[in-house]
Image (tube, rainbow, N blue to C red; front, side, top):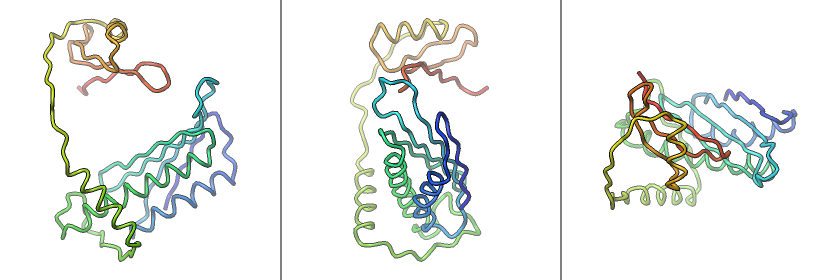
Length: 195
């Protein structure tokens, strides 16, 4: 397992790194090849944010990306929560793509299934999650509206006036459909299509 740890507004002590690596070692047991894991530990300097200590984990796995993020008041608690989330996602990934008789789209030629015997509770939890995901959400409302050419800053103002979390518009500089959205940190984000 190769873990790259980055810190933002936090001192990365050896104890913190070791704790993170130990927690992520549980995720490695599901695969026979080494996982490449990127971790970002950050602390928000804004005192109004209660859950200011965030742990983000990203794993690239045969072309897929497994990602988890958790924020609490304590970095060790954030690591615990995100490690549990990542392990659930990896179990689900393995159940879907490794146990389908070779039909999984992401199964590599070199990868062989690992004989891991998780507890019955783990199997039941994964099967329950998969069953819940099979209940597909339905589109219950459709809405059409004209897209107006404007600058991203103007789109942010429209979004705030409407009280929406996102707003689609035609960027007057690029003439492409863009979307602005509210970020968790209170700022705005802009989504643009690739050229």
